[in-house]
Amino acid sequence: MRIRSRSLEAGWYPSEEDQIRAAVAEWEKTLEEGPDQTAGAGVAPHAGWYFSGRLAWDTLRRARTDTRTVIVAGGHRPPGSLPLAASEEAFRTPLGLIPADLELAEALGAYLRLESDIWVDNTVEVLLPLVRLRFPEAMVLWLRVPNDESAETLGSAAARAASDLGRKVFFLASTDLTHYGPNYGFSPKGRGSEALDWVREVNDGGILSAILALDGREVIRRGNEDRAACSPGPVAAAIGFSRALGFTKPRLCGYYTSFDVHPSDSFVGYCSVVFE
Figure 1 (cartoon, rainbow, N blue to C red):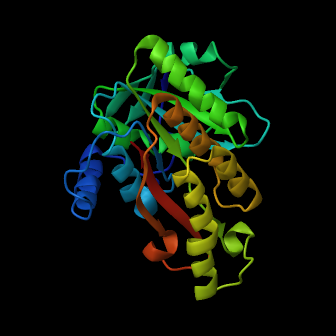
Figure 2: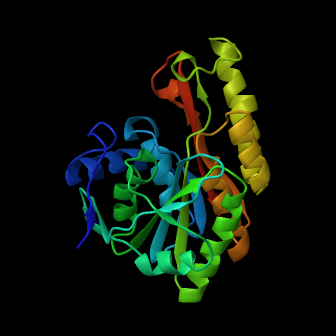
């Protein structure tokens, strides 16, 4: 069996099962009790768990309970590139192996061209242990989506492929929002409280409004032109998937920045959104 092993260092997410379960138990103390578990798609951040794991978990805990496959759609793909899919048969996590849904990958490949993802990237891997914990019997389709308008088409094609197979799928889009400050070479509002307010209310606020309006084109524009997301493609794909299957009630479940966790002149925005 071809297995994709862990590539990220331990600082991204814990190495042991008991550490993962302990982290999630702590997050649960701060989250809404008994959320609706009806979402067909969602948006989650992909920073290290210290910064954004709680929001990622909050997205997954709201996923539809009959989920058989989770499409984890990562990013870091430039406009004009092809979407990538992992070709391994399973993914190794501290909670055990997750089988890959290669049948769904093949069905999706009938609608559009996919290249093999052979690179190390955090946008999918960092979410896999949470997928395994939330759905211990589920399969995963590992995708990475270009940051252009083809993304929404990919999402609707994924919905058709899932329907062709009769597969109950949750589409998990992976992105962080504005990367602001000297570490990222992006400081249009200088430093301090004015900069933080601008990121929260204008740059992140604008792309969140586009997500909640199910406007994939505007998500791509704001992500690329305004630098409001590092991976707007997966979000547009989630919108295409959601529209195709009727999950057209978006909900913002949480938002904060890394400044709220660890104050710094350089910080990143994170969100949890679901489509019900």
